[in-house]
Every structure is written in C-alpha cells, then in structure tokens.
Length: 177
Image 1 (cartoon, one colour):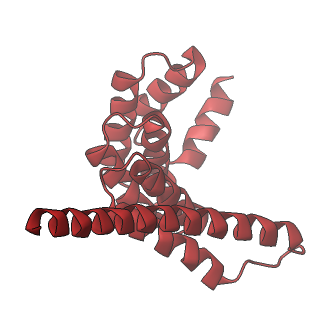
Image 2 (cartoon, one colour):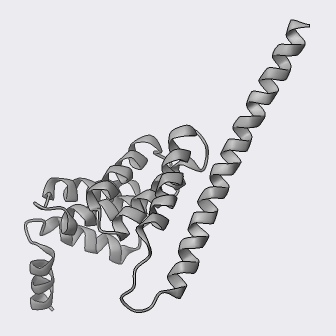
C-alpha cells in the first residue's frame, strides 16, 4: 500500500513538472509572438513597452534556471543574449553569452555567439577590452575552420590590427584598397 501511495505521489509530482515546463515554453512562445505582433504595429520612432520585453526575459530566465539540462535551455540563453544585445545592454548580453559558451560547449549556434561576444567587446563595452576581442576571435577561428574564407580573412585581419578601433580599422582598410 505504501508503495502504491508513493508511486501516485511521484507520478503527480512528475506530471506537475512536465506541465510547468510546458507552461513555461508556452509562456515564452506567447511573449515572443506578442513582441513580434506589437513590433509590426509600431510607428517610426515608437518603441515596445518595456514590460512586454521583461515578460519574455523573465520567462527565458525562469526556464533556464529551472531546467538547465533541457534541450531548450541553451536556446533561452541565446535569446537572452540577443535580447540584451539588441536593447543595448551589452554587459548583460556578454554575461548570458559567456554562460552559454561555458555551460553548453556543443551549442549549435556557438560560432554566432563567439562572433557576437568578440564584437561586443570590440565595439560596445568601454573601455574596449582587446584581450577579450582577441580571445573570442581566436576561439572562433580554432573551433570553426569551416567558416567562409572571407570571414576567416576578416578575423585574421582584425587580430593583426587589434590595436585599432573599428573606425581606425575601416580607415586603414580603405587606405589599403
């Protein structure tokens, strides 16, 4: 009898966990769809209400924190990284990008995250951190030899001229052509 009661309690617990996970995934989808719909309705210069963005951020964080081993957890971090980057909060974008790289070494969009972090540290975090720009670009080159040859050449050129800011690099490239 005790076994039967324990089995029922365990099944109820597992069922509620599955329901919570599905509910969170549904909440993320609803938040994303709402943001997309609202963005289609915006006039020039108008912005989406911060609360709508926060709903998505909260749902993504909640999912990752509760289910870090789930296949959707790295996608949540990726979306957080992009959300914060898109909103200009580059420090938070870097935090979630770094967690993603550290905790999910086989993430399918790893190359994109590496490139994004290199760009964040090159152009958006002040003072500019050339050691991190170098690190992320070197990791990108070593982990992704299948990158297009033009991109590889651009990254190598950037590494060779790491001492230059992006505007200085552009001027140099123009002068060389």
